[in-house]
Length: 302
Image 1: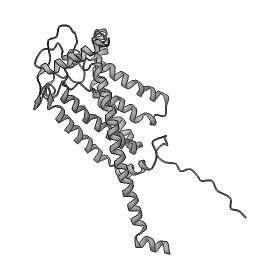
Image 2: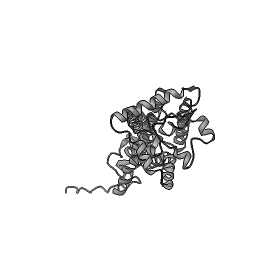
Image 3: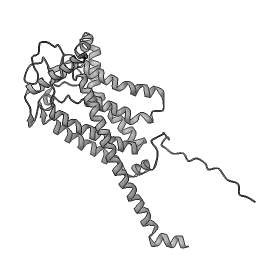
Image 4: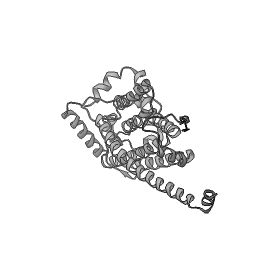
């Protein structure tokens, strides 16, 4: 009598199966990651990043002259005018009469940059640890590379072009408004320590844009409902509007943000692939070691 094949019962897991997110790498990452270590890594990395960032440009040990930041701003505006796309001033002027609207975008600019990024990281860590680790590394390289732009290309943002010295200039051919100062939000660049310690010429590249697009890239395969994909697709566009209407960036800064994200994606993936490869080799070596141990061989002989 021939044996009748019994179909295997599918195993249910706590993690939903999503194309491109499950596999051996996920199992390895789940065993390796510890939430308290990840929080420590993030705090340490961002603290070092902030320390270096605020030693450049308008503040700190490597402060540069405001004239250099202004000349870079004039160059950016000249490029945009040559392309027929110097639109930041007209966009802002169209909405300045609605304080409630501007205040909303001030809050958006000052908070969602961190809130959405942190939420995506927590979601990936909880549900898809391998993807979390990979995109954590991408984000770290992207953020670190932005420091190169801040150091080599200090850029006076639109809101400072007619704000006067010491941080701004006195241009008369543009009419931008620092909406965080005039309308208000959660904080202002003029407040206390922010004014004294923050590098206010760290505009190129725009990490607001880099982080917003990173959020979409990181979470997109895990979005199972159409409405969630619509929300995340809109998020970078809304961020672009926020950085322009609040006069914190030129649109070319967003291009710079995309460029550092591309470079960060390549470096982060290369680093992660090397890390995962080493972990796979270690796991295989440990498996062989256990297989060759006397206890295992005795058990098999029995």
